[in-house]
Amino acid sequence: MASLAFLQPATISSPVTTGIQSASVQQAPAPPSASFAGASAPTVAGLAALVGAGAAVGRTATQRRATAVKKKGVKVVEGKEIPWNLFSPKAPYKAKCVSNETITTKTSLVNWETCHAIIDHEGKFPYVEGQSAGVIAPGPDKKGQTPAKIRLYSIASSAVGDDETSKTVSLCVKRVVEVSGKGWCEYSNIPEGAKDPEYPDAEKVYRGVCSSHICDLKAGDDVLLTGPTGAEMLLPSDPEANIIMLATGTGIAPFRSFLRYLFHDKATKGKFKGVAWLFLGVPFQKSLLYDEEWKKMQEEFPGQFRFDYAISDEEKRPDGSSMYVQHRVMEYIEDVWPMVKDPKTHVYMCGLKGMATGLQEAFGPSAEKEGLDVKEYIKAMKKEDRYHVEVY
Ligand code: FAD
Ligand code: NAP
Image (cartoon, rainbow, N blue to C red):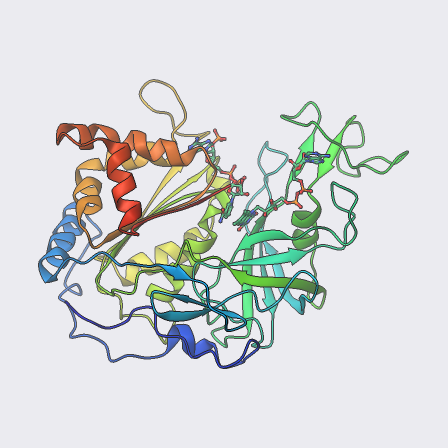
């Protein structure tokens, strides 16, 4: 098996360093090119064959045990240092918004809007793919705290950032909006005597404090960041690993970070020798996230990258119920299940809490056919550190 470290050893020398980009994108010589280039279309059969090819190379599950270390600002994970809580809520990093864009189109839902914010950290907020950042909004928050209590956001850019300078971090944030009479709405934070400008007739309107702060950011605005944090969603170190990603809504964020690292960034593109398969669930076509980016990646890496969507409000299952990501997975279970059983495959899930049990439902029948208990099987995968879940 190739012994190249896909996630490169970190070289963090101090809690605040501009040299961290080398931590996640340091170059290792590329392994001899696998014969993926010839693959012409992202067919399921093709993917399955690739998985088989990968399996023949060697099978070792990545053991990732995070150990707390004394060194400030770093955590050792699998023997490698990753940036860790360089900035605390008491001493956040004051970054600046570079740009902010709404990346969804209006639907019938009040919370239809998701934005992509690029934030300049001048190289002082290093992170690796799969980590999260904290954001402190001016507040007051729902508990009346000013500034607001931090909210966590999965980082949506790879470590080098969208501009590949290692000086920016991007977030994919859904604007939380709740309006009475238009779905669930328990609370209201319209100031007394005022009306919500968008829903002046609604009795109650609640606008998420931090998500509104981020979605309203303009170029040049300050953004207070904490972290980075999170070791659950890191990429495996084996470049021949296979990666299955399941996202609902903004749960796409860590996977955009992964996929740019694997298939986009100049410094790392082409080093990955496994297969990556993304499943994304959103309510409407208009809510799809980063669709153009996935298309480009698939065009360039047809034998290695595949993506499939579950559009819950527009696609129905044969029984008339909504199509969720786990149901899309079930459609391809004959290809997915052999991948899951391959010890080189890592399964990642991010987004809504409900999807975690949904995946058990998807894997259940295949596991049963082989006399396996799906819960026990997933437990074992977790132990092997190849089942990664961050849901909220
Ligand atoms: P808040 O103002 O905190 O409101 C949240 C909810 O609290 C509302 O539903 C509101 O009705 C309710 N509420 C209001 N008042 C009260 C009250 N008095 N008592 C009880 N409840 C009340 N989100 C993303 O969009 N993108 C991401 O990439 C992302 N990544 C995340 C990663 C992690 C690890 C975690 C844990 C969460 C992530 N989130 C992400 C969710 C994010 O952290 C926030 O929870 C979300 O943006 C809402 O925050 P807010 O401040 O806008 O909402
Ligand atoms: P969204 O746009 O509403 O999309 C969610 C999609 O999942 C919808 O199509 C929805 O269908 C579907 N869905 C609902 N219940 C499901 C279930 N049980 N199983 C599978 N799919 C289901 O998503 P969102 O508002 O961005 O929500 C994403 C959630 O992820 C938020 O709660 C956010 O806080 C969290 N998040 C967590 C992390 C993290 O932990 N790292 C990172 C990012 C986001 P319907 O139309 O039927 O509802």
